[in-house]
Length: 412
Image (cartoon, rainbow, N blue to C red):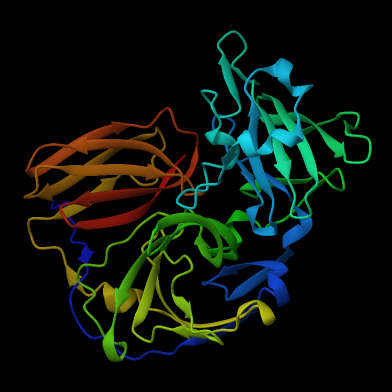
């Protein structure tokens, strides 16, 4: 019995005109909202941008990320790196403190993860497996007010304390201590907290309900003299989605070598440019957003009105069937069995003329949790022991040379 299967690769051709969906979103005037959008359902979700000030990654007890809401003009500085210095933080020294920024490449590196401690805000304690805080942060608001923050502990959640600076008396308020547990909002990627209202808030839809987030974010902005940190407005992609940018004169272009990226700012902000009175959009610039299951959507922006309205318009279409029209050559095949697997043991069958073949497994949140390399050319049958993984549904990705494919994997 021949167990080898042929899979599909990208090929150069002119895309056939298909039905497009036109989407109109609005961040509202002054970009008051953050908007999440899902291609497969054509659904959007609005959240008020000022509802949150700090975001805590909650989808994995072994990983953490803490992001600042830089889109509302909130800045974060490292003020001290020993716990005792929390008491004596002086806001008048802010010019001497180190400013910290969210990554605009990965959701999983927030501003607070870039502090001077080994884990940004603290150090790992091998005795209890907690990350214990050492760094004091100073938060500066757009109106010039201040709060100080100390993340005391991470262990399946985040315990922190903070206080507010009283400009009139030049003193700090009494501390408020809170814990945001990873068990809150189990369908979301992040949990959120608002220091001003002292409340935990929900500021995003379920992780499975969005592909793009339209928002303000900090990036390295290039100008004639170099680069600078600058807050821009644009789109950041979900970690389950990879995006390729393509130039297509007259709406047609070569799609044989689309370079997909998991950097969350691949779409970013520079699909538009300000002409002095309005925004211009490049008619030849298209984006391809690809799901882990291989579904591909082609995206093209058609209107952006800026902060006066916050209105954004784009067209998209499902081009999966058009891109997947040519099989791998006979030297590149991939198959897995059994699937579903009842004992978490699977066999990988491949045939490739490339010496370097990569197997990666992702969970439903898009996080890579397993990877291995196959070094042999020709036909290979390799067994994988996945007993370390929990029962459930995953995506398994195979890459050889310039070709890759992704399949659903079920472990029972």
